[in-house]
Image (cartoon, rainbow, N blue to C red):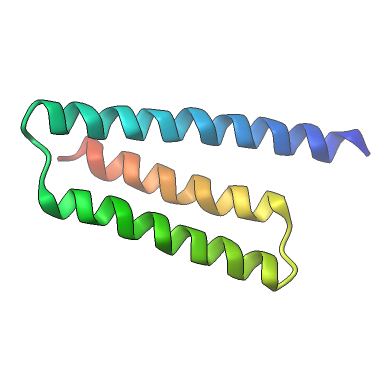
Length: 85
């Protein structure tokens, strides 16, 4: 019974660290003048899209684990994209 909660806690902690890495990368790009208006707009629209996806997952009976997995997928995609800029 405790194992699913521990897995959720671990996945949520990883999500927090991964998201901080993406935020740091974006802030460094902006500070160094490599940021763009398109990236700034994408940053906002991705958040809205990810939230809508999470809301649909919950509305369809999805678990918190599935929501966190979805957010982590989005964050990893952002990290990959930002690394290759």
